[in-house]
Length: 185
Length: 99
Image 1: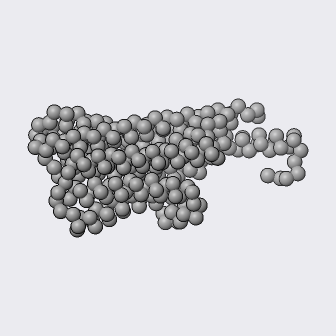
Image 2 (image 1 turned 90 degrees about the vertical axis):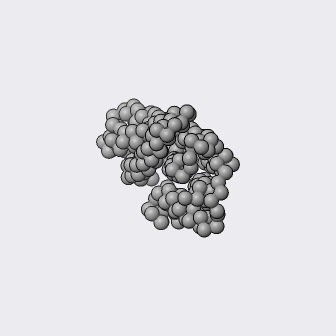
Image 3 (image 1 turned 45 degrees about the vertical axis):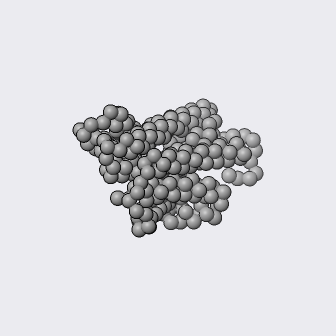
């Protein structure tokens, strides 16, 4: 930005910058966010399925619980890959600066930062749950069954908090975009 | 599979993720170092969490026997996950409010 600028030209400069920014930003949600949310939510549903199967287990339910654990783990890893690609390729360079310049910077500075880092616990917890189910007999060992129930409950709670934080981040982005569009042309 | 080794590796991975996150935010040099490994600090933290999980499991598997107390180990995993979550959340809230 030029240093010697009158108030008038400064206003024109800012308005011009917003116009360029508006032209560059697509306000439609990126398809990868939808895919990330789909994979993550179905991963959480898989652990909810596991939880229900283990409430009153028999041999068939334990077999289904193992399938749910494997499926949930795969879905969470896929959500990690897709979400990570979107985060590094699109969110960081395009969305983050807009949220931080908007009326709700907390959407990135707290919610996105917390979400992206706490998410890293989920693949680890899912692998522990899968390992536990595959290598213990939950029909004979009730403490292993309770352990699998507790781990899956923690995965479900963290997963629900991911969805909630995703909503806040989207809201912050939308608020920032609305602020940009409110600038007079 | 030695479940005690797996659970302890999981605890190490989750607590290290929290520690790396806070350290990276407090030290620009360390964050740059993390970024230099894969091109993005968050990707590096994710890779480290898996490498630590696999590496610590492999090491502890050599040391531990087959004993596994599901109740005790699960309680430790839950406490570690909650602690990691509180450290990460608390740090970013503090960081935002103090900026």
